Image (cartoon, rainbow over all chains, first blue to last red):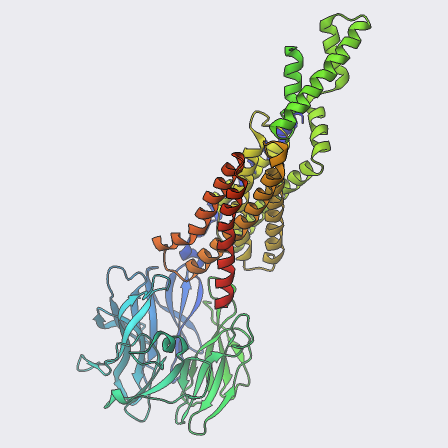
Length: 345
Length: 287
């Protein structure tokens, strides 16, 4: 082939490549710049005020949405994370927990209290652990329960790091004292809920004993447990024991022996798991599927009157490294499903 | 030896992919043809220098002759290489751009590597590097190309858009063409006596096939381990032990075959075969 043509071909390849490299340098996004939009961390107050955390180029931002407006209450650095939040029973304050994204240098969590009217925050307490969840006692707004993890590590080289050695604690705001309620140092505890009538908390965890064999651990199920605070060692399962599929997250229905929980709807079908919400009455042992979004419905929160359920849907679940969350609301029977528009999502 | 003919014929032979034995045969045939042609021109009244020039002129341009002979000896080979290189370049530019604008990731390193191997293969295809020993370098370039486009396969697989599907299939076609060309290049490239040709061909065929299976399985297990891992751990290198055994046994078999130790070569060939068998049995026993 003619040398001129060869030079022309390779010059063209070089030019196109150089152009792509230059636009690559200009338009490449950092990991932080890719983290945008609503997280799963939100809460709904007794007055219908919604507090939610949305990321903006990796920065966690805490917004307060009332019927009239949405306001930015707080913006954190990219290396910080809001792990959970909880409205006080009267809805005037919001407790939220901040931890560092990177935990190599040790665990440190700080729990703050935000005044919903003034949007001023004050420090409640700091702890050298990883606080994963918060829940006010509906019976006593002076009492804030929390889940505290002593370690944040991967138990195996081929596992991701997660908070472990978790126990239930409470913080008494006026007395400034902490009480440890359990001594389980559990591998995993989630979805802390406090009973509105009894001295009982509810959590989701594995139904496996500490001395379980490898086979038992492999076969373990995730269930909902009731922990009486006066005798925490006498915890018991309240979810359906005969249910084969794990339960991952739940919310108690006020004034009823019932809950809304998250579980996989297509576990035996193969393919990508779909997470839906279910209603379960543990008194009558009746279960009903509420959603059919064929995606990832998560983190149910039931309104104070028990008539509606808020929840998060990740429309990019299993399709992208980054979630694309939306806030939804439906009636407690699963009807009237609609998206709640958030300005900063 | 006529130095003018020697230079002229060597330029033609450099463009042909045959082995040394074949190249020597072609070289000798072309030299004889040119000498006869030159003698005829001298009988027609030309002096020696003019006769030599007339003989070469009537034979044709070295590039054209080399190209035609290559095409006659290895039909569709050039077409396959052109198809591979041009489609690879197109794939690289498209996947890089899609990754950049849809995912926000500029895979500059991969772009440079993939354009690099595609360009080297294109240079070989266009006979622009006649000074290199074609088959060894072609095989090295092709194997690098396969690994680089396996990464391209993952890049297209993880695009969060419907364009991911055609791009993923596109990458698989590129890898498939490159594998076919490795088979062709390796199995045509042997420098042994006729009696050993069949045996060497068979050993190359067996080893390339086993190599593809072992490398694919190793990369799959590495990917599966990495996907659940927080970071790279040294123990993950154990995954590459079957690959190492395969390389050592492949080289050993060829060396044994060169020395005429046919039985020993086949015994060594059984080792990677048993590894593949063990991988299959283990995989099907756990799934």
